[in-house]
Image 1: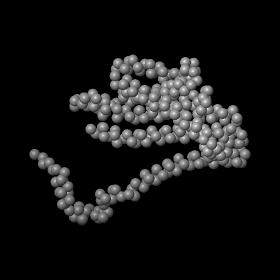
Image 2 (image 1 turned 90 degrees about the horizontal axis):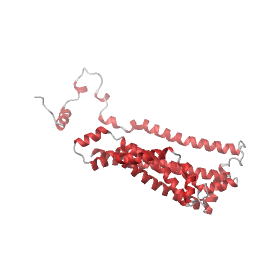
Image 3 (image 1 turned 180 degrees about the horizontal axis):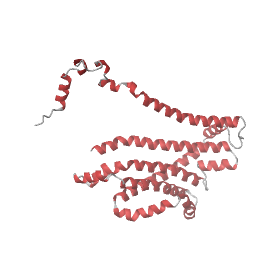
Image 4 (image 1 turned 180 degrees about the vertical axis):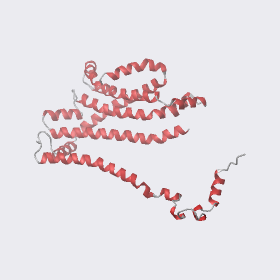
Amino acid sequence: MTSVRTLDETVVASSSEPDRDVADPGRTGRAGDRPNATALVVPHLDQPKERRRSTLLSLRVVAPLTLLFLWWAGTTWGWVSEQTFASPASVAEAFWELLTSGQLWANLSVSLTRAFTGLAIGVTIGLVLGVLTGLSRLADGLVDPLMQMAYTVPFLAVAPLLIVWFGIGEQPKLILITVATCLPVYLNAYTGVRTADPKVIEAARVFGVSRVRLIRQIVIPSAIPSILVGLRMALTFSLIALIVVEQTNSPKGIGFLMLSAQQYFQTEILIVCILIYAVWGLTAGALVRGLSWLLQPWRRKENVR
């Protein structure tokens, strides 16, 4: 019979053996020349990785600063007329004036309310329908063809019809944002549920895992990356839909502020609004990445169970 040594016996036996480099004079090199276990975890070995991270962060900062310098140089040295493209100083002054007068927050709060209300409704509907359609063949046959047809139609084409049906109030604006955010979440949730690893699902069924536990611990965690992609697309589409609805008979909002600035040729206010939209998009992307980072421990925990 082959003798089996336990882990503890192996550790004790290995610790009691003499150092081969010292005991064997025929071996080249000395005991101190060989790296030991502690040398494998010294902090300086991680320096190249940290250096790469710092380099990437530097590149992310250099590009916006270069663009800002070219903007300042073009407007200062007369390459671009200030009537065509306002200088950074004029934009900063316009931003401060809008902020101190309360006009910026009065319009931004309305835009945020519209965007997040439509986003919450659209994401909820898309997520529920996507997961349900991915899990049920009956729902797949009834719902998926309609959602696929709706996705092929540009959501901005629905705006005139909504205005005819519901007028120019808040209702058509919220409906358009809801439609714009629902479809990408639905498609990505449906794809994520459908593309769960069939081998893992079959193994779970062989071991007698219930359907509810299978969905909660295997299907949903595997679909989270696709759902997060859909959420990021929904945030982008909500911003696009918001710009459209606020520039059509809207008394408040960032889009209304841009439309008013366009009529009076106030390019500095137009650039302020564009920068607000840019910061909005970057913040939305950062929120999705943060949500993905928060969900990673939960996914690992569910997969281990």
